Image 1 (spheres, rainbow, N blue to C red):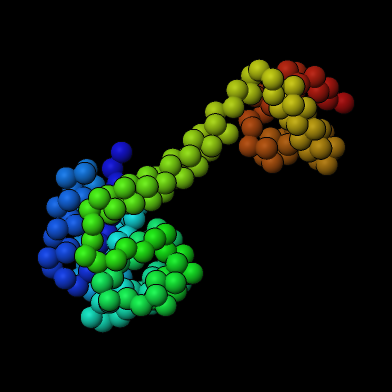
Image 2: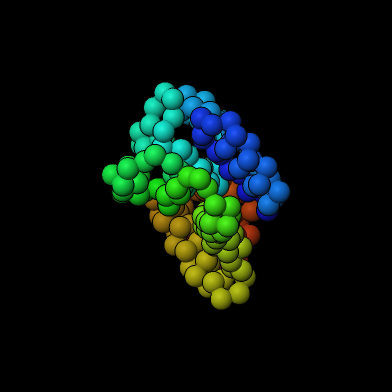
Length: 193
């Protein structure tokens, strides 16, 4: 299960340290040193989590996060800062940041937090896919067969009545060829007048 992270921080040492630690934990990591670079990267790649500094040289992290949200990018974000005021932290959390870490970063705090939020995002995505696949693979030949047949019968009866029992027109509307349609009618117990 690949998990992709983006680290947005203007300090090269922090970016490299975080990349090294997180790649050792099995994450795929991309780096951005400013808001412009981060903005470009999130438009090109999908991430499970973004770690973002509050203070960036070209725009503050909270404003960049707001820009992501306004562009429909809803990747979970953890804000980081060594100089941020409580106001910045509260603003970040208010607009949807998952957490706020103070620098210097403690890897013993960082790693469980990253794991928690990156994993939560993947579970949400995979859970949604499992729900969809369950819907798609319903066994219509068992409990739902009578319902399916009833719906098909009503559908074809409607089109037969609307088209005055003209099989050619019903075949065109339903997308079923005439020979197949006769067999379908027999299976569904539909008698043509």
